[in-house]
Length: 125
Image (cartoon, rainbow, N blue to C red; front, top):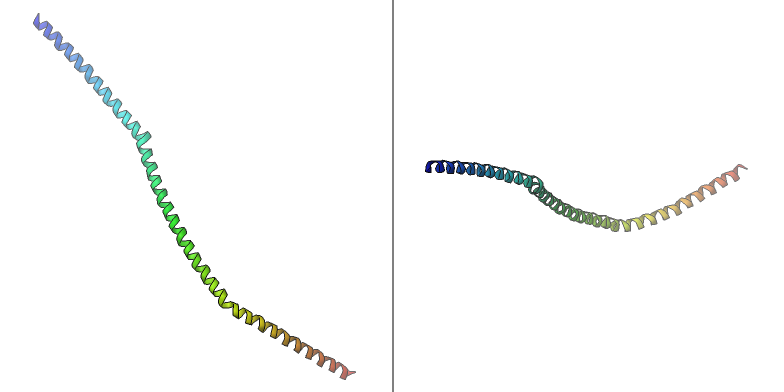
């Protein structure tokens, strides 16, 4: 009688252990599936988003640095052009005076040529 009970207990124990093993395996598979889903749906995208944010921050810093450098260089170029304009202003004034003087002289020469032409015409008559 005891051996029947012992065998029955062993059988029940084996069945319980088998069920527990199956449950443990199913639980492990479910855990692994959930972990893969978490990895795919959350961890990887968040990591990629973090990488994108890092890249954007670096790009913004680079853009800001480039903007500062360009503004500085443009400022230098403007200063150079302004200095050249200031240097040319006296020469421009002199050139205008020269043109005015030349204009007066050209007008005088034209008047002389007209007068000589008029004299020739008089002499011809």
